[in-house]
Length: 346
Image 1: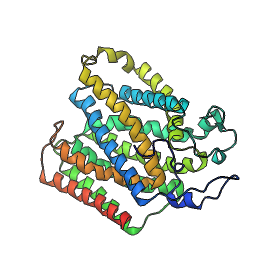
Image 2: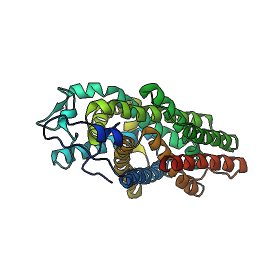
Image 3: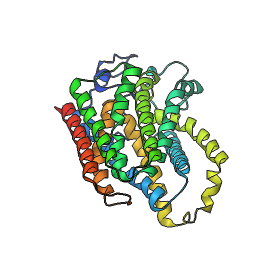
Image 4: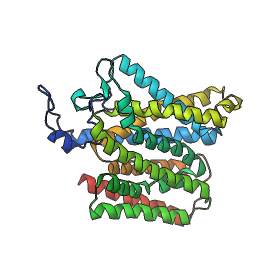
């Protein structure tokens, strides 16, 4: 992963904002503008992590038929919290790039950890994060991979709406048209889906809405928190893990894990471990990519990596029947993603 020591811009601050920021204290060094190459590598890292994690999650839920998606989410959260705590205690990472940027009484400079006041400030972000995590796991089970990725493209429309409502940010007409192509492609592909599952579609669209709100919250709350990507991840994980633990315990999912017949298979355990580590890497990449670029760019990066997922998905995990209308819709959505990428890079 790039930027392993967490020396990224505070979440929500784009490159221009970082360059314009004035020193907050004597001796503070003004941040330099990240290069286009660096921003591109961050986006590429996100796409690589996202593709790999999706296949591991799909393998656990479909190939191994593991019934408890929320338990996987809980394991991912616990793994992320453990890694962050260990790395911070070893001073391998920090949770802020400049303590002077953090609001008063929100950070303990002696221990290097946020205070309870910071957790209260970031509670809305953590709620959005938990919804995003839970719906991500639930939605990947219900539909085949090519259709899943095509429906996920409509996240861009949700993101533009959320950015406008929460941050007042608008997009050029060319960008709006490219996003409209992705939405139209999803509609056409859905009309030609021979394996239509209403519940699966509802989960995917709910996940799209949760993703849009989550990315917009990173942009909004990141500007005022003063935490870097690792700090935001820590606050999210600490608040979300206990809630999810209580929920899975009450529902009986935790108790039923040991009854799963393949729980002791080394291959299944390897899939779960890889899923947890990749979830940590992906969440960091989401924060970093959204910080350096924008929430909408983050969404389009997700759409571009979907081209790889679609290609492999037709060969993997089953549940796919080729249909001309369905394939045409997927192609239209992919063209919309590529058009947006061209508009942002020109």
